[in-house]
Image 1 (tube, rainbow, N blue to C red):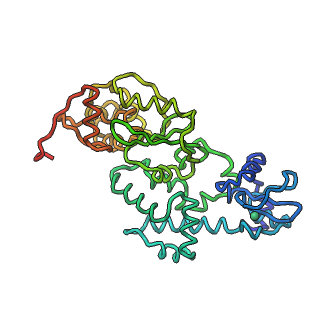
Image 2: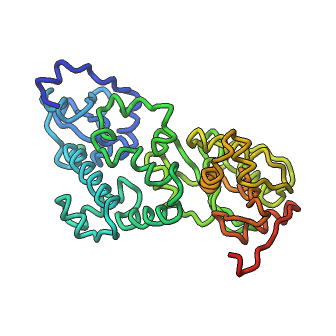
Image 3: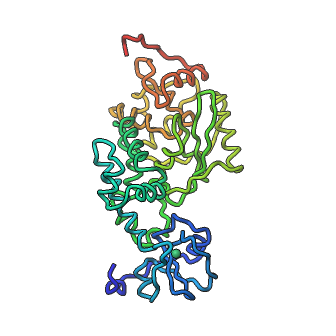
Length: 361
Ligand SMILES: [Zn+2]
């Protein structure tokens, strides 16, 4: 933005309370969203600046460095607020490179491509994204391998949605970023606090994660890094005492699958996915449906394959009982948590299926 144009653009509205609160807690996630300038020193800082906090009445807020400079302030030498945008653009470019690469790029290559020293780049990337570039690349590869059929709701999409492939959008002006949108969910969890715990269940270790509206993930073999990749813009914290009843509800639903439970679920998918997931929840314990049955139930009898895909991308295992969907010939079909778990779940519910002979597989 040039200063000449700035006069003509509407001033972004800054939520001063929220901006001050972010400064007080040195919230890194607010870096790039707002600039705080100290009247007594003439210096402007990003919210995470480690320097001592001035009194509230000595601070004024700007949407960006340009505005702060136009008002006569100088950049803080300690927190280097002007580099936030540059760092983030570099991260956005690195993510594009990783997304486009056939193989996982080496750190040195990535850092050189975006003009940073490797160690420094590793640090800022990890700070912003929550995982190292290599871990991001591995997660992406795993995701692609696991869900080649999955058109929606993937890590990749979450990242694209979060705008890292288009940093200009993600790092758009403060006006956009201070107004949380209803689509926060799809937008990498922006504005949401997600709490998580790992549970030792009869089915093995499971990750449970919840927003304040309900369970957003219940999965096998998922670690914290993967959760953070899925919701790159959410605040991700360990479970607190308020989540305890939800966790015990999940445990009892897994241990006693035939009992009725109505735990709150907070998931967002495409329209089609949501119709499939809703249909899955209607299958009573002990019963199974075929992919074709579900396709017919959602009003698209030919969409058997798409049902299989939506079934496979179910974010809340067991509670959204995708394990109750089997093939039309009565054989198990697939399961994201592995067939052994699908057998265990169905057996615990008293359902029947047809085991395939090894040579059929
Ligand atoms: Zn500073």
